[in-house]
Image: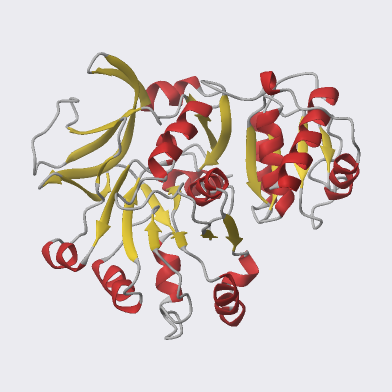
Length: 405
């Protein structure tokens, strides 16, 4: 944490001294420590960052660069060369790992807290699949992130994750996927350790289970499908990770079968099901899944709204429906995105505002289908042509548009 503080301050100073605008900075890489350092540096310099996994297809990376039109790209993956075709003939500045190491080795860059991202400033912009074939950037503010963290550390009513205990968090999702915000910022906020599972690790079971044994994590955060893969081996049990306290899932439907297996294999841990799109800062509902819940409900509930969030089920005319009636899940609250980057048309289509108890909040139309029962929210599919694959949202029209191209 001392290195993170010093290095991010020096990179922040470099950004303030060498950039002319407050345009978002694109940060490309995969699980490298300098990736996180760069995120923090951007926010300290007063700029949003755009996380891009280096495993993305080159065409998708180019689309994001064209959409953002950044002044600077930070590359934390040596497999991507600054002078590669990606940046050839471009006026965009770029720095790589060698440049970062030169920057962090120099003293003299002083931090200036007055420049930090805060309030309604964009903290990060994550690009998701767009129906036109071009990705769209979801803008999340500093307030959105703060309000999310305030809830994330209290998911368990009996234990606050920001107590004095040091915890180790498993990070499965790449940092370009908003699920990673859950483990990254909850861990940083509480002074925890991040155990980052790389792409190569996920495809090598021996390396993966060896890593989990060495890390002996307390908090597991992933998509349900990743835990289903891990459960395929009998070794994935309490003996492998004796200190595990909590499994937190988001991004996909958690099945009764998967939840039951986890409870059976990890009797000392709890299983938490959450729900939320990128446009509402990772997750906005939560529920502890126990054997009684598994027996009573199928599909499993996705929980109750967090404090500061109000979720309504609406029909096509935007009338609020009663318990048991299925309709669109509409999210109103203090973690709803401020809209899409440079895309007013899509922003108007998906976002609005609503006043609740005298407070005006942003509103997001998820196009997810759901209903309330027994005070719990349930998810039951989509109202459009979007699908989920390993937690990633993919617009069928996106695939169609690219095939046509």
